[in-house]
Image (cartoon, rainbow, N blue to C red):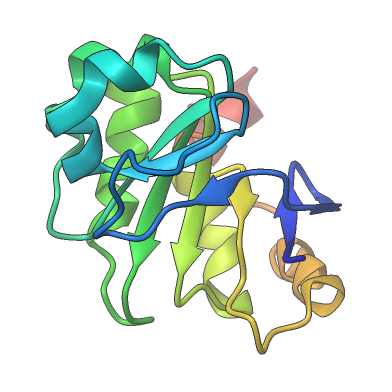
Amino acid sequence: MQRLIKNGEIIDETWHLLPKDATLDGLFNSDDLIVPLGLWLDHAHALKARDGGLGVWLDSDEEVEAIADDLSHFQVVALNFPVFSDGRNYSNARLLRDRYSYQGEVRAIGDVLRDQLFFMRRCGFDAFALRADRDPVEALESFKDFSDTYQSASDQPLPLFRRRQA
């Protein structure tokens, strides 16, 4: 069972992440599922009727605008990083939090490494499924890498100079 970092703690994974080529065949009605965007777009009506939890995942070439009207149906939005150097989903996380005021879990999946976690949290991620060969206990330390930030972001809307004035 995979372990993830969520809200600063290490927890056991309880959601099933379906692959990109998944179909509705054989899915249990009560499982908590994170479905690929394509499956959601093709079968939203059937997925909404399930009893289990529902999440969706977007690849780095898919835009959050595709699910903007459906965000109330998802407890989890997972954003895939196919390679460490592909940062397009940082923007999707900011859009979810800042433009669409999404309050559910925003999870980083894929090639997620310790070096990214601090900055991912700044963009609005609150859960991180690290790459399988990485230690989540060691990765927790990345949140202590910087003691303060200058810029505003999803996790701190006021820049440092405004916080100092207050």
